[in-house]
Length: 323
Ligand code: GLV
Ligand code: GLV
Image 1: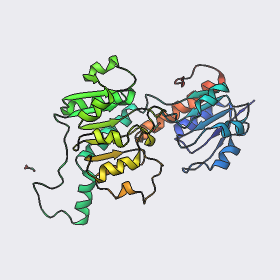
Image 2: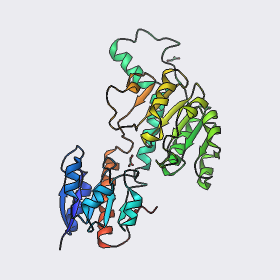
Image 3: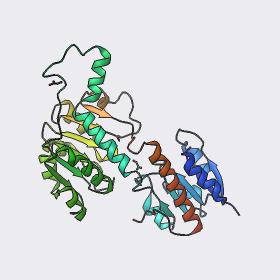
Image 4: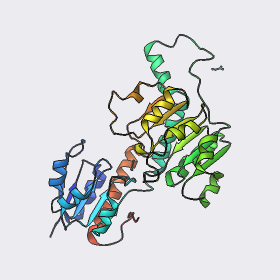
């Protein structure tokens, strides 16, 4: 007897192939690149045993109620899980799969790219070339900040934070500071110094947010936070938008309180095109593409499918979320 599985989006074929070939799923797919409308999500999950979802789907009590008691497994194609109502999910005995590790390298690479693009003002430079603003070589034009000899602070030295630190050290970083719930033995590899948040914020030339979104980190980067940063410091966030108070960030950037910011995540997503942050030259915003390489997205889809199938058959998932 087939089990009902709802997939909330068109995902890479690598994943769909695994789901189809398992032969145990009655698959129903929101076959679009656009998010499933809420009403369609509620309809789609009705009676489902398994749910494949993305970080843009809010899986809350309403969705779980709509699904009903059949729902045994949720497999999200993401490493983040702040879109899942975990307390409620656990209470119902539903197992959850997610995709750590496989996107660590791609996300760390993107973070380095965003940091360099922001610190060396690449988008502004490209724009000047296109618009005819490039009149000649000028000693004081489009100057930014370099990593060599700098102090880098990483908020959250988890899998991705450590991978970022590992990539930055060869640029000649002098000190690598990090903060989080506690000191980590693996920080040795990057000569990381565990310091209080205030120390990290005030001493770093580059502040990189790489923590997960929790009640502790929500709104962590606010007016008080930015007021402690060096005026020459660059702020980078590739975790979740709501770790940052965007009004406070706007104020810090527009007043010159800090030098620049590079964001791969915002609140909301997408960011409206008339958002004040988009008027600033010293703010580089990307559309949440940390894990967006062809290979990584394919591997994420495979892992998502394998997690789901393991959950449906009642065996250990390759990567089960246990919190
Ligand atoms: C990306 O943000 C993810 O959670 O996978
Ligand atoms: C830069 O191109 C230089 O020659 O200094």
